[in-house]
Image 1 (cartoon, rainbow, N blue to C red):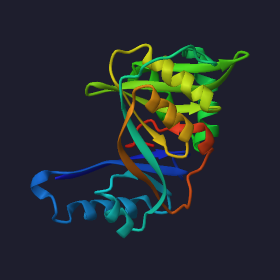
Image 2: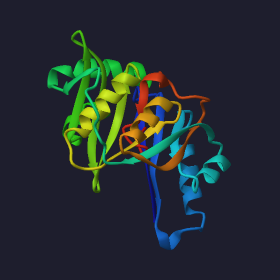
Image 3: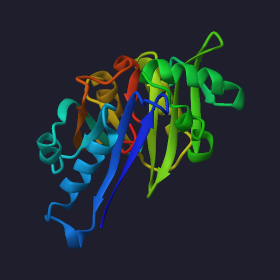
Image 4: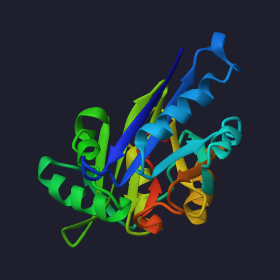
Length: 230
């Protein structure tokens, strides 16, 4: 009838954050309040754990009714990336030896421990690449298959130049169109991606419950793993 996925981050005993995604209601039960009852159950079950989600324009009024607040927006892009010239930052495929550094960087930028997600990326994603400077990892990104696209996420980078290099390197290793959800505050990356073949197809509201902003450093957090898991 209805389902939702809640992904918790941080200590198991008291998660620092939980992301709500994949809120689905069977079509035959649509517009009967099933989704509202499901979300009320989720909010109650999570107690004092702060919550976040990406809401479509269709779902946003329901979440606002339940007390979620809009704190930002993400723009969904899709298309075949058209390369032009070499990037300024060196990138390469990630190795098993990179994992400890990736976990440290991810927790610093995301603001909560995502070990259970990041350690599964090598098996889940078709590509996992890192950006380096003087032997130090300054960013990483994954591309994983979804329908006929490769979804880019997470995309964590020291700066916009690093994010561009990672996005271009992922595109260079796939024939599929890319899809990604970029924080609208990263205007330069969005403009550059559109100049290279990606087109805007939707906007989602980034919403929270129990906190007024997401933890971590948004300046280095360019795209989520997926809008269903943050």
